[in-house]
Length: 169
Image (cartoon, rainbow, N blue to C red; front, top):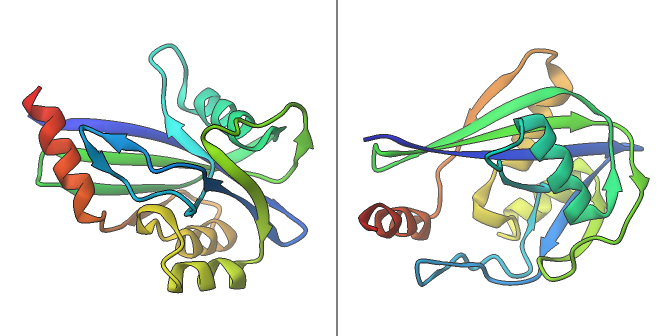
């Protein structure tokens, strides 16, 4: 049986910089740490049952950054297949405005910060991006194309173990 996991992301650009968030904790799933504390990522989260993917992207962005954005378009879909049974589908929406509207969730996110594409490449090189998500590749796809780009990435091994344990329940 194939099990999809749907994630909604919102990548916002302002003045040639992109807003990323830094994880405050190591999330634990089925007893396995994601080793995400201190790592940077695009604001994202799982889509709730009662919302659309776009609504989820806006909600996650608001919760994690404390700001609102106008979603311009779907920029990319990143995906990974784990052991042929789990498909992670990450819908990355693109926005170009930011308006502070509430306090962000500090229990999940340590801080939000604007980075240039060059700075993001350095974070990737230094291993400071969560789950090895190819953020600079996603940015390039969004900047160069008006059509949705499909990007595949290789997940860290601990994610495979998490989903193996979840499937046994």
